[in-house]
Structure formats: structure tokens, C-alpha cells
Image (tube, rainbow, N blue to C red; front, side, top):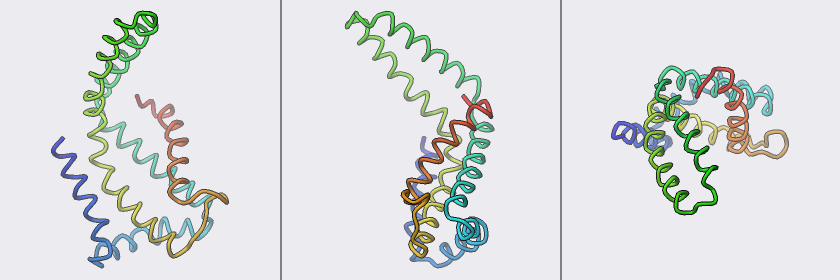
Length: 171
């Protein structure tokens, strides 16, 4: 947990210093302008879709490589069993309260499982978001006529990630 907080704080400081230290901004632009920038310059709509597909695929691979699959499957099975038990006792408020209390015990375990992949992906994604902000400030546009870059990224990531999770057999 401490390592995650440290990485997150460092990852947040870098965009905060983006304009104060030109080397950070220039390095980010040197890497992303010829790649992501070229895709967006070619076609803002489909360029954004391609960027999201690539990034979501990479983060899904990182998740697949770093998550403890056995612990995740066991946790999922336990949650499913608890949900089934909750369905059986939906008319018993006392038992439901007890089962809901039990369900809260899954939160820290789930958080621990998802923490490790986040350590590898949070800093690059925060930097990418800072670059997106610069790019779309200089080149205002909407994606598919109505999405801002942020909402386009978020919606496309949710949709694409759901397909990739099935395809890559992520828990």
C-alpha cells in the first residue's frame, strides 16, 4: 500500500511540474507527438479509438502478467457464493445485514489484488492524460462530434476493456 501511494504521489507530481520543468514536457511531447499525435492528426476520431485500443491492450497485458490469478479466481468464487446466499435470505433482514457485513470484507482483498498492476500503469497513464490536455488545447476537437477527449477515452476504454478481459481471460 505504501509503495502504491508513493508511486501515485510521484506520478501526480510529474504532471504538476509539466510546465515548470520544460524537460518533462519536452520529453513527453518528443515521445507522444510522433506516435499518438500523428494518429490524432491523421483522424481525431479513429486515432483516438486506435490509441485507446493499444493502451487498453497494454494495460490488460500488464494486469494479466501481474495479478495473482488463483487468488483472484478464489475471491470471485467466494463473492459469487456469498451473492447466492444473499439471494436465499433476501426476506430475512437480520441475515442480510450479517451477509452484507461479510461482503465488505472482500473490499481490502480486492484492492490488494488490483494494486500491483496499477503500480506499473498509473504513471504512464497520468502523463498521457497531461499530454492529451496539451494536444487538445492546441487542437480543439470533439471525438465523433460530441465527446471531449476525456469522455471519449473513458467510454472507449470501458467498452474495449470489457472485450479484452473476455478475450485475454482476465478475472
